[in-house]
Length: 250
Image (cartoon, one colour):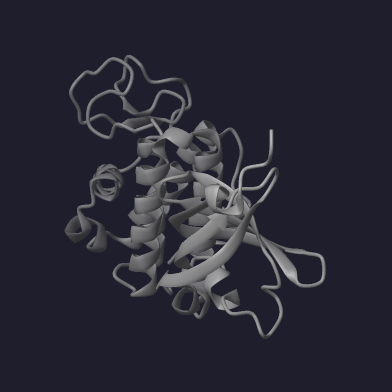
């Protein structure tokens, strides 16, 4: 059977650039989270040349409308139209940059493992990057809110009210990442951390998007919440994020 034609293998989709790395002298491999095709690995030919028509549109944190052609191992980017030029604003601020790096690393791992939630993960990531680029909220809060929501979208929604194990109504004073969030005294594993009530309230606000509460939180509770979010993320991803250790906390 003949190979399908170029036109038959061509498709169009919105995508956010997660990561890139060099290929040969002028090409670049692009890791994309697309709106309708999940995670896509593609090659952008000649994109590193100064004469490239769309090199700047395929940098990390950028959102673009792409034309691609399916390949055996890598798809090929043939056209790119910018939709969200978030990369420049994010890269100009180190705190925003490190937060965005942790976001796209998380998105890459989650979308690689769960293709079914690709559209929801795409929308969530684009919204978070847009918020970072316009400094809508403190970067560390946008990051932690994104991480909690991304895990929830992937099927690991934490509970910060009722007991995550038995469902007993809260509030409760112990946190267990393996059990799924706050737990009652009967379900609490030995050695579980006991976060401050204000920290638990902040975690709930970050998960639900209550920015009035989140923005009014104190630094000590933000740092405690960040530690719990990191432990929850690491447990469910079964690995740590390389970029998370570089995130600056106020």
